[in-house]
Length: 192
Image 1 (cartoon, one colour):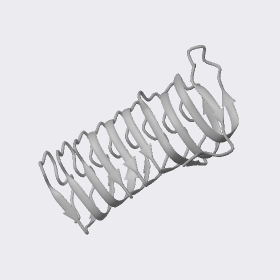
Image 2 (spheres, rainbow, N blue to C red; image 1 turned 180 degrees about the horizontal axis):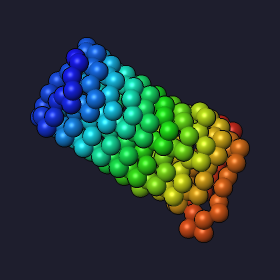
Image 3 (cartoon, rainbow, N blue to C red; image 1 turned 90 degrees about the vertical axis):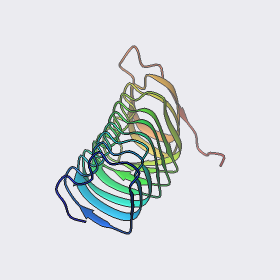
Image 4 (spheres, rainbow, N blue to C red; image 1 turned 180 degrees about the vertical axis):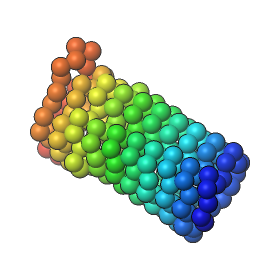
C-alpha cells in the first residue's frame, strides 16, 4: 500500500498482510486493527484511538503521538519520539528501538518488552514496566511516576519523580532534582 497521507479520519478499518509506505499515515483513525503488516511512515497514527496491532513491524519517525486506548502485541518498532503524549496504551512482547520514547505519556504499560535507545520514558505519569529489558538506554525515567521491573542493567537513571524501579543494575544514578523521590532498587534476581 503506497500513498500520500492515506487513511485519515476513518473508523473500524482492518489491515492484514500488507506492506505500507506512506508519510503521515493513519491520522485521527478510530478502531483500527492491524496484523502481520510492515509500515514505513512519519507521524504514523497521530491522534488515533482504539488501535489494536499484532505482529506489526514499523520504521519511521514520530509514531503513535497523542494516541489513546490502544494495545500492541508482538510488534517491532524502529522509531524516534514514539508514543509522545499517549494515554492508556499497553505494549506487550515487543521491541521498541529509538530515541526519546514515550515522553509525556500517561497510563502507558510495557510488558515483556525490549527498549533500546537514549532518554526513554521521561515526564510520564502512571508508567508501568513489567519484566522488560533495556539496552543502550541512558538518562531514563526523568521526572516520571513509574513502577518498573527491569531484568537488565541500565546505563543511567535520572531523577524519577515517584514510584519504584527494580533493576538488575545501573551504571549511574542521577538524583540532582529535589523533587525526585523515586526509589531505585538493585536486584540480582527476579521471581517470574
